Image (cartoon, rainbow, N blue to C red; front, side, top):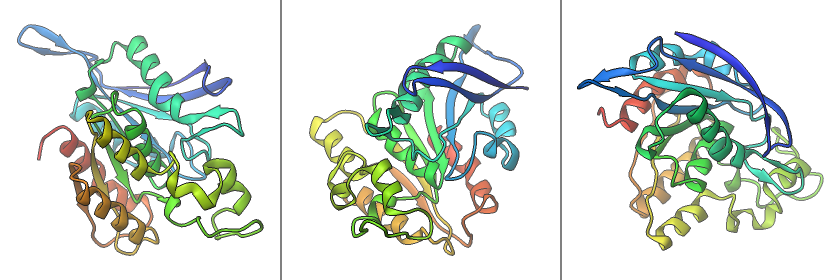
Length: 262
């Protein structure tokens, strides 16, 4: 097993950045006399987190070896993995396009959509959903654990408001005008409607949220939208709070579901 940290200049972020990577001992696996490139799984951290969270707190290393995956752990700061005109930073483009191209070329990974996945918890869960939809031609599916569906909760905020996580000014910077956020492209529901209208491939989703999690109702709301629109998904709840004790119970089931190993 190889674990490393790489630094490179990102055109999307207009600065140097770094990511961590987990590679199985054998970069290729033999299959009928041919080499099989590694599949890619990008795992996104949550709000106030960093690229080491999955490495230190989960079985990501074991999952990489067991399921023949290259797991990439980028740094998203507190961006919600969105492109921001006001900030000049394009985190969605960075994760969903630039980073995918870079690791595929550098490490000889599979270039097939069906071998490319993304996942995350909390802010990273939202980022995984949104990125998979924005770049639906790249990602076959996403794992979203306790997703922070902020777009459902900030519409009524006014200048000076603070919901205990962040203030109105932060949300406006990240998501745009809170009054119109649910009708904008940062809302995953709108992206699903656009994909439906185009008649192109839709990513599939593995969703999980603990019954004691403060984000439970917003996750149930998104699950209802997926069901209403016939999107392929798996949704599960169960006793658990907003922490890695719960998320760790769903990393491997999520991987297996995306790989078709039910």
